[in-house]
Image (cartoon, rainbow, N blue to C red; front, side):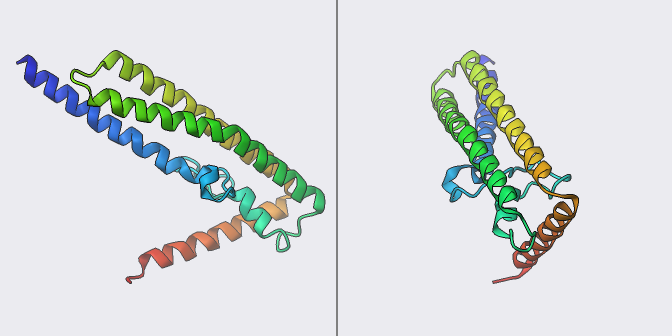
Length: 171
């Protein structure tokens, strides 16, 4: 009976680990590996200021259309750089912890106390990353006028519609 419980518990932990390993991949577009143009991207970042797209980069890429001043461009670049400088080491730490969790769950028997501790450590870092995204969004929002925010939201909606259309087409 203990072997069955161990097997079930081990399977559950393995499934949880697999799910947890997928989470950093979902967040990966925020990091420098995506070309250094990421900002505030995440599945939980819906609504508000454009639904979680890399808004600072999008605004900077469309600075002429948004009629951004030189000061606004400089402030947005500063916000983006600050976010990236803070988020990059956290992303690296989360990836390292996820690797540790995967290694720990491969051991027989798995040290569940240590696995739980590592999961909690990773979640604390993810919550810090989420806060940093929200902070950067709010700081970016404060740089733009209401008209510019409205234009950016329209731009995001049109880009989102184009992306959906491309995904819906068959190759």
